[in-house]
Image (cartoon, rainbow, N blue to C red; front, side, top):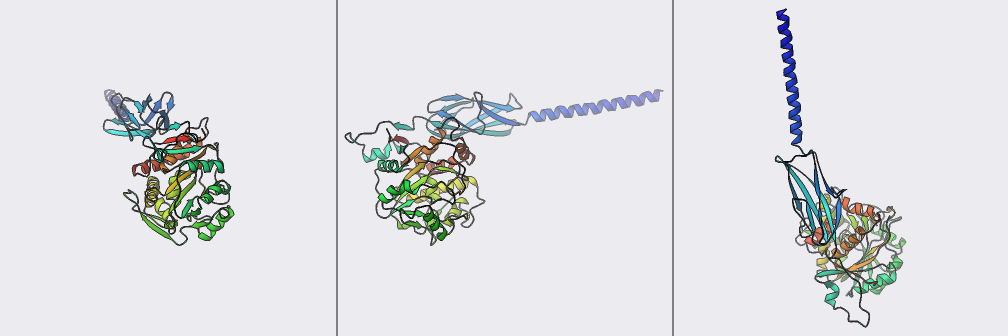
Length: 443
């Protein structure tokens, strides 16, 4: 009997020991879990802005909250803006919008030496987009050439809402620029069968007024414009040969031009006939793009003027002249900016090239797509500038300013591809400025 009682006691003690081990393990696991941050979210008011874009006006401030799961009172939170001149931030969750532009705010949680981060993007508009409401009449004193090209140190972007031949001529004339020598008009001939290329009837008067030759380069991805013969047929089918001569500039290969101070490229490959022209007028249909996020002036002078091998070179971030695929996204975006800068530098540091963007048929897809998505936003207008970065930034700003969901798909396309990096890098390397003055020539 005594022996049986001892056995039962041993069993009981063993059970209690096992229970203690299990309980301690569970407590340890819970404690270990509390040392790991599982998720971080950022809220401004009731809006979740984690990995999203929030819009602010210049001079305004906003407070945000950092939500951490699971919570721990000993967490150290650090907030940092990649462009403090645009948006400043402190570790207490206060944002201050300083000037127009875009900034990425990173929030990092440090829990016992282990770090986890998330981010939000802040888009600031306001006083840097100064709109000149009244234009001088013929009798009034007109601004000097210096004033036309720059207001308070910022490049000027001219805009009209009239998307027709007269509106195009008017916005071009606002530039007060005349090409010299042989003039090339760069545009996209459009991929068949149904891309949103510029209507030849829209551009006919302008192209012929500068005695321009329409120039293009072959594609690097197949399609109906991969060879010169096929490309010329497309130009004819789409009506471009009826309004001007057409030159496929890389019909006989490439021309190498230098890239100064590039971080991705040291050279750029344009069409061999690129140097045959003294001046360039760049007509771009502004729209989305499946890889670049959007396409405008910078894309038109980089990818657009690149030869077939040059397109591979840019897409690959300067690693291949035969394969356009497999490169890193940000390398591609920055390479576009650097290739565009090379073109501008070659043309008298930008003095012999001018830019016009047409904001109609605003699909999320490029004119290189023969089956683009139908636009889900209204047409906006025609914009022009001597600064391609300011021009593209103005177009992006106008997209972001749309209300009631108009343009939401295009905004998503831009942000999902990190498309603004092209303009950020273009500004950094001196191709142009993202801060500008918008002049409405209809008023």
